[in-house]
Image (cartoon, rainbow, N blue to C red):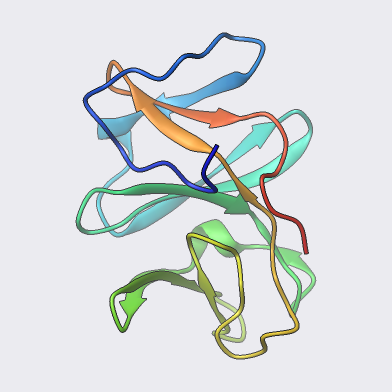
Length: 128
């Protein structure tokens, strides 16, 4: 499974045991994020201005606060990114890698859209 699956018209093979329904696709405005609790973990679910959806840990390793869902969504050289609202370090939404410090990475989660609902996969696909 890829780190972050972009929205697609095809339905993935899934069950409620593997995926958590977090919100409607339309509830998340383009260029914003929202926090969701998935299996006790705070996840930042982010929709780019182009409409792609990503999920990563909501924990900012630099400020030590759960704030990434409130970050600045954009891109860097065509790579979707999320900048922390605290110290502004930017993270690759696809991999969780920090652009500003390559030794730092936040966990990313599989995500998909099914019948207009954003689903986040159980368990991080990438780890720090």
